Image (cartoon, rainbow, N blue to C red):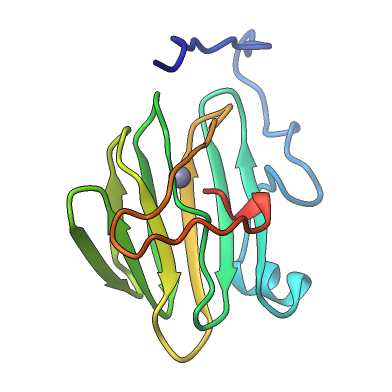
Length: 156
Ligand SMILES: [Zn+2]
């Protein structure tokens, strides 16, 4: 059984203030244009953390056709994604398959293995929203058996 986790907040705002804590580059830029991230990162595959604090990890992930993540599950948070570009498939525990495209949101509860693949013929771009420390418990895909280790930054 995974250990119980808790959130440690490293600092609090003492009052109202202008947004001076924003970074000049990701993560935590005041205004992110997705096209700028794509241009900066170059050809897929890649992943770029856009927002990170004690409660949220937001990552933009680019996958080439056929590309995907290493199947895994999370113990202490539900994860969700927004598809910006392309066609993606989520193979989930229990024989569930979700196919999603641009402007779709996919939500997966804790304890569900998710194997995400680009099933289209062009680049797929998704934004993952997770919670730190986002511990991954790797497990083969129940449906296709896929278990290969990919870059850890694809983990979300
Ligand atoms: Zn995940």
